[in-house]
Amino acid sequence: MKIGCHLSVANGFYKAGLQAVSIGANSFQFFTRNPRGGRAKELNLSDLDKLRTLMKEHDFGSILAHGSYTMNLCSNKEETREYAKNLLRDDLKRVAQIPGAIYVFHPGSHVKQGAEKGIEYIIEALNEAITEPLDVVVCLEAMSGKGTEIGRSFEELQRIIEGVKYNENLGVCVDTCHLYSAGYDIIDNLENVLNDFDEILGLNRLKAVHLNDSKMPFNSNKDRHERIGEGTLGLEGILRLINHPVFKNIPFNLETPNEINGYAEEINLLKSNIT
Ligand code: FE
Ligand code: FE
Ligand code: ZN
Image (cartoon, rainbow, N blue to C red; front, side, top):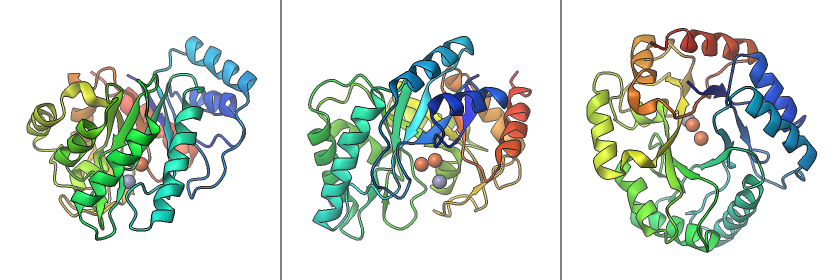
């Protein structure tokens, strides 16, 4: 199993890789820049080389580069959309240099312009940023549907993907907290949810999982992550999910409210329950 958690790369990528290894992880997630936006640090190529070697030594899966939360490609303000487009272009260039990295971003919030309009803007932005076949995998994250979020359903995600010209390397990162909040019952009806995913998106589009429990009830459209086993999803259901063959080679990353020791415990718990 490939599993990790969200880590800081403030001290470099190699250090983050070492920290991942120290907690039993063979993947991790990081923000491409300050999550609230702004300029990204120059990439240090020798640091990335050291990470590449470390990842080989420890049989890492893909790692996840998460875009900024402020990157709203379907804002109602042109200025905000332009800013988001610049972040996206810059992120894609950077992520291509980071070994084994998959890019994950939140599709955006349509701010009462309607999902139609929002989807249109997101497609436009992706087509402007992706002007040739991509080397990196780019994932839209499946969202809980809070406020005016786009990406609350497999249909919305599929409409975006099919609107993008070079979409071979576009995929979806599912977040277990978000799916459950969006009304996909991955706990009591996992098989049906996966069938829906397959029919609408195709399972080949499933590239990554954010593994979180939720503080909020099923179908609440609320986005509050909880520690594994302490929320409404529960340990039993989460263990069933991680053992499903569909997820066999898909990296899981935790975004649970934890310090590093808590992550180490969760990774240990999950790994020891793979059957
Ligand atoms: Fe996210
Ligand atoms: Fe997430
Ligand atoms: Zn979330």
